Length: 112
Image 1 (tube, rainbow, N blue to C red):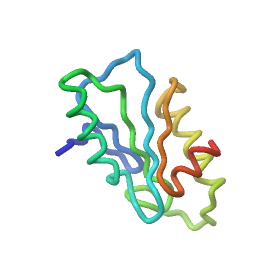
Image 2: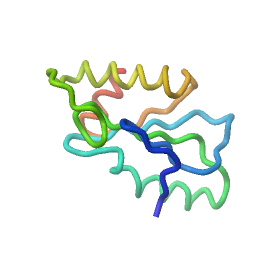
Image 3: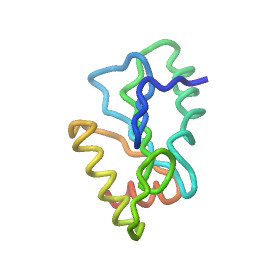
Image 4: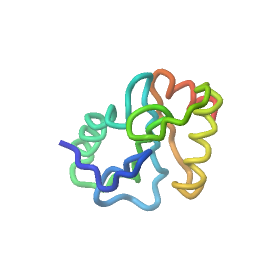
């Protein structure tokens, strides 16, 4: 099974080693899910890489889901889009990235 290297309140960074030249991969889950939704996918990516380092992989918990905060506000696609943008800037350092989203995560990623 995939092992999380770092878990904070709102995201997980997967992997032990990574290719520093490759764009980061940011995974955004669907409705009523969490960052854990991506564990099997990343496990398969690691298996297919055959020991080669993966790019940095992040799985984000959208506000109101998973281990993220659950503030008393109106959750809209605009809130989640802004969260994705802020996360990419603040946590990922504005590095080039590939966004992959499912369900509302896909809509939020497309809008970001």
